[in-house]
Length: 134
Image (cartoon, rainbow, N blue to C red; front, side, top):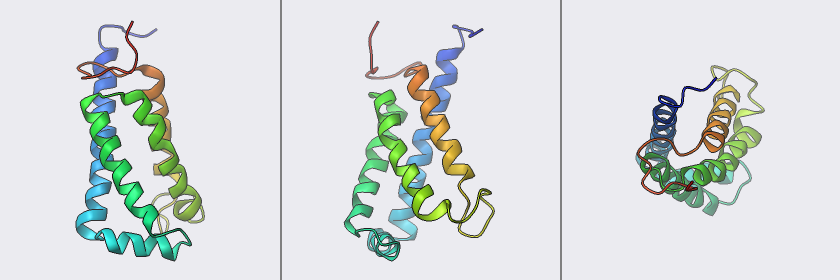
């Protein structure tokens, strides 16, 4: 049975953590790999280089939406294709375990499940603009 007193705080914790993870991955692309380096990496995978900039924009917008609780349930669903893309292009061929060379798909898959849990659970406590009002 769900504890309705604490569940909104659990969802808040999940929402903020997921948002911070997206901003951390954006930071990696911006400050370590650089935007142009990220675009070159996408091209090395056979993807358009411009897609890297769209991914970075979605990581920024989605991460902030999750942290602030602005249509967080929708943001969670919108971010899932980014992670599916990482599984298809990089992590899937590397095997299951994230410790495998090139990182396996276990972490992106878990991240997808966490986003689905958030989308199904609600926006949580202190959401600035909840997805649905009762």
